[in-house]
Image (cartoon, rainbow, N blue to C red; front, side, top):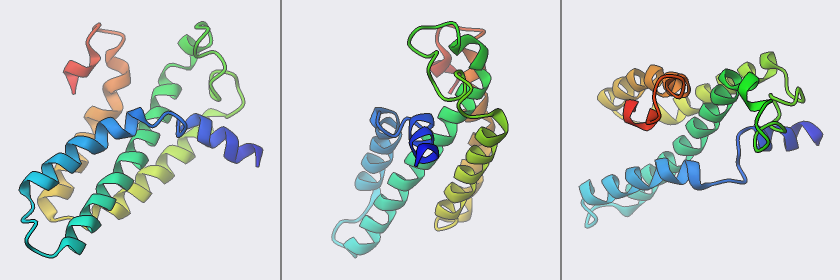
Length: 144
């Protein structure tokens, strides 16, 4: 039970704003592009896939961010108690969690067409190098 609690803390599941910031543009885009007079089951299927993908990839991103920032996080009051910075979760376990989340996200992704899969896989290096941009600029979001 303690490991589950640490995992939930590690992926910041109790702070949903992060995955909602990923999900809402997807939902808006799908809603604008989808012919709502068509089969709504398909619309809701894709909406659920976008929601799951947002949670999974944001969670993996949080872990990667915490791995990159573990030494900085130890020195900041707000972040010093995060699971990796505090040593409650090892880097090895965190990497396993992140890979598992990415694999689960890939299983969500294979429900889309080839172009979508290619674009999503092509964006992963950008998404996972994003935490490093904080070292070079005050606007790391501009990198994305």
